[in-house]
Length: 467
Image (cartoon, rainbow, N blue to C red):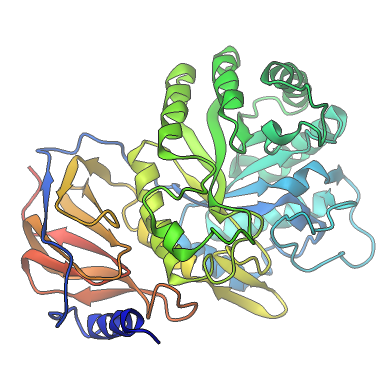
């Protein structure tokens, strides 16, 4: 263990005792200032979401009311979240009204990777009925993706009608296709363009809408080619049933890339990202063009299943908490983190037969969940490390401050008003720790000057009432 790692572990050990003073260097003192009122976006109650592969429904007993352990984990994560069904396997899955015969092909499907066998997976009415019971038990709703890459519009229409009939009010909307911007040379010719996509999407949409009258739609659910989003945003106002824009975001990738490291993930904008900060402006422009909200329908730290030793560590939880608050500050209405099986980036791993485990990212999601329902207050953090971010919120007359410190040293920050003694702390033994991540209540010394431990995030409540 080197000196930095040793200091890292000492810092967290003392932090768990109630955040006393540290006996070694801190970051430069920083100051947080706030605007006079909450004029930023509000965070919806259903902001939190998870994303799973459509192939999982070849096993009708996974998302089922009998899977009580998974239901409990969903409810702990959010009382009103959104489950998105889609992923790369949705372009291989077909629908059947017939109940399955014989044992399911697998217990858990896991993340869709180039090595995953996707062919022959079937979603049945039984799987949908079980899903309805699962959603009713969790309080969650659903976004459902249809096979556009290799499926027929006739089968998609039959599936949409069944999903609408069985899920009822638990169905938020339908999506047509997964990452259509990646169809070229895969499901479509190399010459396939956004214009071709819009023409085919409209044809599919009309068939599905006729079979499921009153259903709502979202799209384009792209990977990273923003010209497809721009084209869809221009088309969306022509359809009264298109109510949302959606897309994907992975900070790094693919899995196995030696550049996909913890140090890279902690950077404000990872250089291996599929969507840099300057590209967020294109998303915001699409939102304005369409006049519709934007939801991140699939994403995570490192695509193709996650990076071992990165996506399954405390670092991923800190990144997750920070980026969720950042996206909410942009006005995005939700985030669905992709997972399933034992993928390195999966917030929940396991199976009904073996039990389920919370991975570190699970606690990062819960940290962001703490401020759902709140409205952003404009905030400026001066003098802090680039690895430290601060966010301010107001909810029912109470102001709260979230500080995410992804650095290896503590951060000392002067708040605009004294903090109360009670706070919520996201912490763990070290940034690369796979075990020991926790989100818990802690007691801090009241006052305007606070010290945030290294590799941690804290949610403070200010004593001063909102103005």
